[in-house]
Image (cartoon, rainbow, N blue to C red; front, side):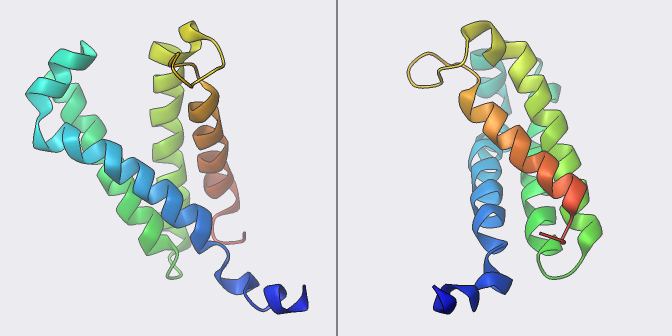
Length: 125
């Protein structure tokens, strides 16, 4: 187990990469095809584009923050938190907890908690 402790200074990259990849994956289609996404989601195209910018920009900030710019980490956490609160209350809460096949809020709450962690702790993880 002591060998794993040597990796501790790099461990922050695990949730950082995962969260950034998740938001980039969901943000890119909003920027690349905002009209179709707006129709599918029942939201104005400008709102979809703004969400895409928040998701892609937040992913970049979170990764940049990992290089030492704590403000990037905390700002990404705040942007992601706001995005997830909106997603939870506008879509997922009405579907309950289970996110497998039911569009519940289980996954979104986990993302919100991780985002809040980065917003609060910054690079002191």
